Image (cartoon, one colour):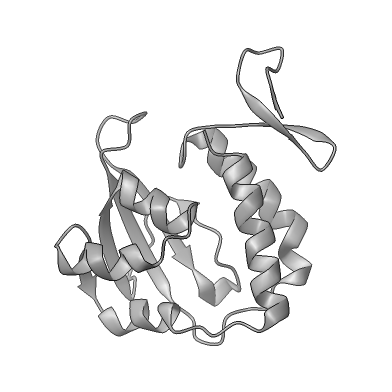
Length: 157
């Protein structure tokens, strides 16, 4: 059910609460994603292999230039953060729409297609990216991942 908050943004009513939708990777979206992360932090296991990954997203409709982010699983989290970190294991450069397909829409089949077509540029240890793709979740982990993905879609305009 779509509703319009008092500030004029569209949002969805989810889990009995109104949720505002924001452009993917906008500062408002990142804030909402962090809040979701805080809700689930005690239910998500730390990754086995730490990965320090810088991400550069190009062609974001709300930003001039590039959107810089990173994921540092050595801190026990997959949550994307803004800005780059020093000495990453791997860096990727990806178009906005491809990043959205992967992170929000979970169209993982697009990863290999985008990589092979050159849309995704990788510098550093490519095996780190492949290790993330080879994670084999339990049924409980998969269910939790789907729940989080649905909530991410709810906050994404």
